[in-house]
Image 1 (cartoon, rainbow, N blue to C red):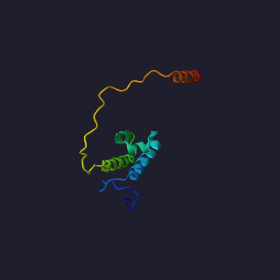
Image 2: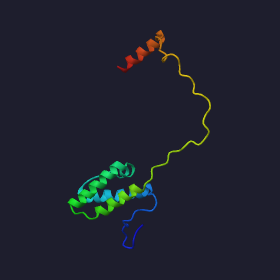
Image 3: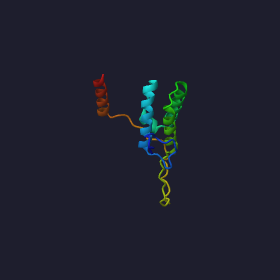
Image 4: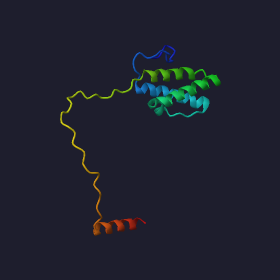
Length: 133
């Protein structure tokens, strides 16, 4: 939500962030990191992979402190807040009845072994391999 100045408020979002919000914030941080530090980041991967996003947030904070780039801190906080407000997708749960039929029995012997090739199959196999060479 934008305030009257046109900047993002540094408040935590009350509801989970959408992927587009996180991608937009990651893109803003990417542009600033590229302009100020020369660091190129992957915005889509930042929005997808939380571990990479945390590493880039830490990098942005470190550069903000070491090179006095004040604009990076609010962006890093925003990406972190959006990342924290994301909820992992729920796994579907089977609510139907359990099957009462037993599982089929395992085969008594090991896997079936292939017999020797017929003469026609052997000729075809050798001809095919010969053509590849």
